[in-house]
Image 1 (cartoon, rainbow over the protein chains, first blue to last red):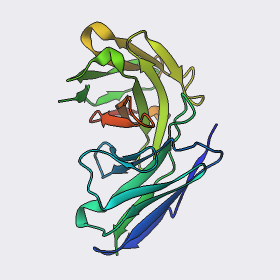
Image 2 (cartoon, each protein chain N blue to C red):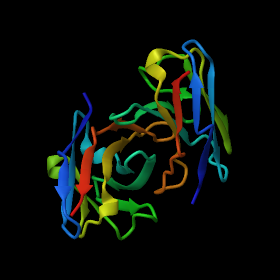
Image 3 (cartoon, helix red, strand yellow):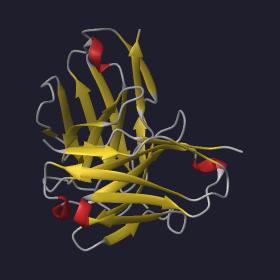
Image 4 (spheres, rainbow over the protein chains, first blue to last red):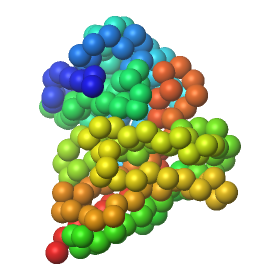
Length: 108
Length: 120
């Protein structure tokens, strides 16, 4: 199984801050890395796929980078609606498309 | 418009059986994999398994193999997740999600979730 880790597990930030979340895979997954946002009581929402491609309708302040084992999600200027939990997911190893444990972003 | 609509919340007793559903619309249901994701209370997302409704090819994550059954009825564009004997530890929110056909094949559309509560 491919294990996914994320850091930090939580962070506090202010509106306008630049936020970076890191995701690491236990083995190379090429660019088969996706990022999701989940707000309380809601289903996850796809933000980034293939490590760096922005899903349609997602604001351009979200960006992703990385390949192999190390990946990053960046929010360039945090907005009030961005306070949520963020998950990375590998889609390299079928059928076990593992998620990371999540990073909770809350208001400082 | 692509939609995945899941069946409503369930309250069951340990040992009971259950089948929840996920109905797709707005796209060719047979052409996309549908996955199931568990989220236990206050916890993260866990990928359970996936089915291709076109031929019912089904694959399970190791942790869920033998614990649940995933199926689909392509004639009514519906995927299912079922348990033969529920346990209290099955209490969770369950999401279905369509696996896209582009890029890294992420889950681009999600159902609204079905809350399953198992309690005596």
